[in-house]
Image 1 (cartoon, rainbow, N blue to C red):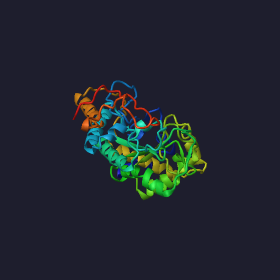
Image 2: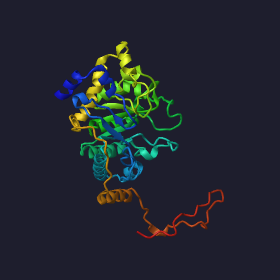
Image 3: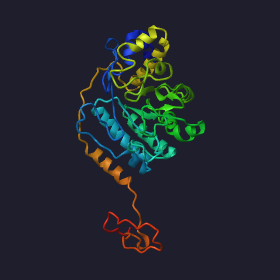
Length: 347
């Protein structure tokens, strides 16, 4: 990482502040003067969107992926998505989502794996290691307790230490410690009174110090709400671009005014450059000319994953199908609903 440290030392404050703010919805600037390329991220949980949203592989929803209970298959799926990302000149996939199914009203549950932190951890580790085996970064999200859509930008989640440690944090911890995930996305919501993009106990105390996370923390798109607090309390990259709070020189002005120490900016840039070094992107050209390549083996893999996610009921004793005309012991009991299938075949 000596090259990274040297690059940080050679960058001006203006250049460093530009590198921690997106320049478009999916791209982040580099520094052409020093051979640091601009780079690209993309959603997400069911495939690789790219920038032009051309034809691409769509995989089963993450809830279905977790229902396979098959980490080896999920690792293979991650490898395929890493290849798709390379086709589209995407350096990092904004996935997996490891928030938990805590309420049936959670509008983004389809992006998450399950209600169980252990299952979510095993599937996330398999997915991340698969993606990153292709030299493409993964970004685990949304850190943390982002499990509902009600008042998504303003809600404050009060959560005790035990619940955090036993329910909400384990999938993120596994992603960091076991899979070496390259980025963590901070969420829209507040946690225990602090906004998730400026939560010192979570972003610095647990993530960067206790877990020794050496990647970078990126905001959810449009999540941060001010300039100084996120800069002080662990956020490393504002997205999407152009940045509302760190862009247009606002972060540089905060440093020059003494509100943010320049050493904190150095650490943010070091983490981003560390990712680009890991991905082999330093001293390479900025290249956003994406391609869409049809791979039949990827289609087959997606179909196999969908098939493994389904659970069939064994028809023992001729119980199925249930009939709408069945007689019930009590008229107080609800009548059965006619099933959507015509018949069930014995296994």
